[in-house]
Image (cartoon, rainbow, N blue to C red; front, top):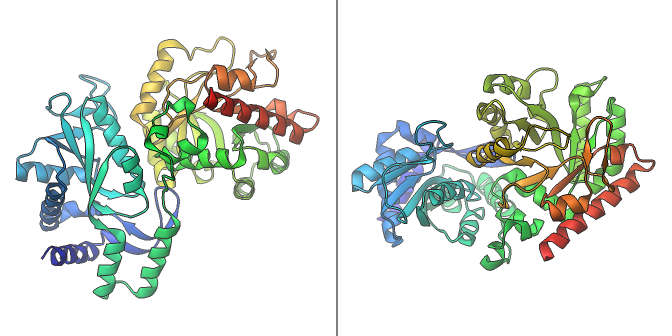
Length: 475
């Protein structure tokens, strides 16, 4: 009977287009032949009731120990609400970001400290959304050992959660759904095989690392280890690039002509993990410049970081990010922002960037003499980043501000020798930045592009910075 009920549910989900087949761009930026969108369930009360009842049975059958439930925002919230009301189980609600007024809580509801909470999710791919909710619950002294999900895409999320001590119990898996729909003649064998190959080729692998290794302080983890536990796709990609290329060097290419920029990037691209641009200083910008830059990024495997330093209200930065002359969101993997306008600047950028798989760094400290980004301001920036972990992946800073391996710290103003310039730029060495101050990535501009031999300079910085990081993890 249970299998018949599952088959019936899968057919209903297919009929309301909660499961679609074709060519889709996922949140991570990956092209997929299958797309799952369970948000439409709220418009179908009968299916909502069926899903809620079956998820409750899944939780009960798992013997999970819990006294309160929490749905992952936003799609799982109505499912959790339905379960709560039907089965008289208390529910708490996680906010996407803490309120700036009143209690400023991230978790709403009444609960006893130390209580066990069951997390309810609609779809799991890498497990990142579940982990974000678990982190928020943990901050409110709620413990999580189990999660239930309507659909496990079978791309490694269950294994990733297991490494974090969380058991995932799924009502459906994507391979199971494909098999059921094939049997019913809803999906042709060719498409089914295409989906199977996609799932096999796009898994989040936790590798052979032990849980003890993954529980080391963030500052002691290798980039390979950090890539395994990273929840944001861009952070994972960056850490993988650093590990593969043995380079935690970002080059800042501050030339004013497109030809100069692209020429330097062609030379140093194999030795850097990030190319940082200031596109608005180019005197001859055309869209072909960003196309060429993207081709070089693919060729040499680096992340493109546009140093735009957004610092306006949300609606304005949305337009600055996506429109105008530069259309930054179309080609920059990573951007940065000042926190001075409040979290509206992050919300505006997130609205544009998240569907494209983009991410943001917050400017918490600066390398210029007399910078006002210190003390309480920096503390507030860190809190803002923690409240927006689904989009903010790290900081521009002079030191490590948060020993969380999910966040990357990038430090500008790095030279092989200490010093400064006539305009107040203060230079630190890779050893000082990486080992003593705990940063992760060094950003070098003039030390490379003004060098007599930029390629040699890039290799020297690359080796100095990566060796410093490896020494830090061994100490």
